[in-house]
Amino acid sequence: MQKAKRKRILRFVYIIGTILIIALIGVFDQSFMGMFEAMGQLNLFWLWMGIVCLICFWISDSILLSHITSYIHTKIPSLLSLKLSIIGLYYGALTPFATGGQPMQVVYMKKEDITYGTATCIVTTKFIIYELSLCLFYIVAMFFRGAYFYTNYNQVFWFTTLGFIVNLSAVIFIIFVMVNRDFATRICKGFVGFLHRIKIIKRPEKVLKTLNTNIEEFHDSTDYIVKYKWQVAISVILSIINLAFLFAIPYFIYVAFGHSEKTIIDLITMQSFLYLAVSFVPMPGAAGASEGGFYLFFSAYFTKVPVFVAMLVWRFLSYYTILIVGSLLVVVDEVINLKKQKNDSTNTEKLQ
Image (cartoon, rainbow, N blue to C red; front, top):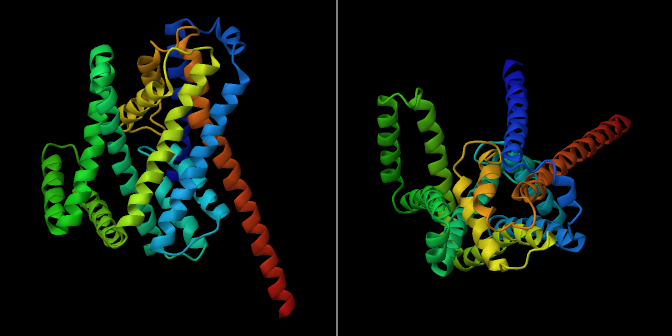
């Protein structure tokens, strides 16, 4: 009970903290007075295009999950795949570093008679592909726009590079596991021991147990990645398309507010940089960093309306919408399961 109470308190503090951060940005930007006037300028067609982009992000995520599941386990229905994707995105949005999404997907897969081992392998493979796709997105963006952003948006460039290094470290670690699991285990043990000696980690045994579990999961996924090279290549392409839909949302908000100077490539690139820059922030949905980052990264783009207003629209579409849709889906799914259990129980009693 105390643990559940603590979680509720932390969630409440998180919500209040997020509201305060948004309010502070609004006060700093002096945008509250002109907010409703700016909202009145919105072109609803382009706003709807942003919503379509968001829906395409959810659907493409489910297609990616379905594709990975097809070569690791077996083909699953499209609606089930969509449900699993939204649940993953929902619980990921509620937890630091989006760590809650994958375990909950495993739990829901088990309800569909997919074993824990297979489900864990599916979500781990998806995570590996996601990290690889994110790094590829950065490399391509830097190739085409790196010099421009270094010259014109120097702070953005270095924040993004730091985020890239964090994600690249995850990819390098996964490669270590693929090549030599024992070597990766020894590196982790030494690193955790060092952090324990300088008083950063208090319970090294618990951390090592979690790391060893992750190493085993990555190693198990390696067999499928090696065996199904071409299918994995297709998964990477699907993952890049999936990220592109998410990163394109600010462009449609940009156009909806009457801007036309920048291209969709510029906005996708900037959003990918923002995504990387806040990816290592240990808050649900990278709260605070996402809002502040949008203000910093896009302030030079939104000139016809306060960037604070654009940030509110973007944050609602990209983050709060999944919280609303995901919570409704979880509740509806729970009600359906309870009714099903009740009907099964009634039928069993009749048979007896």
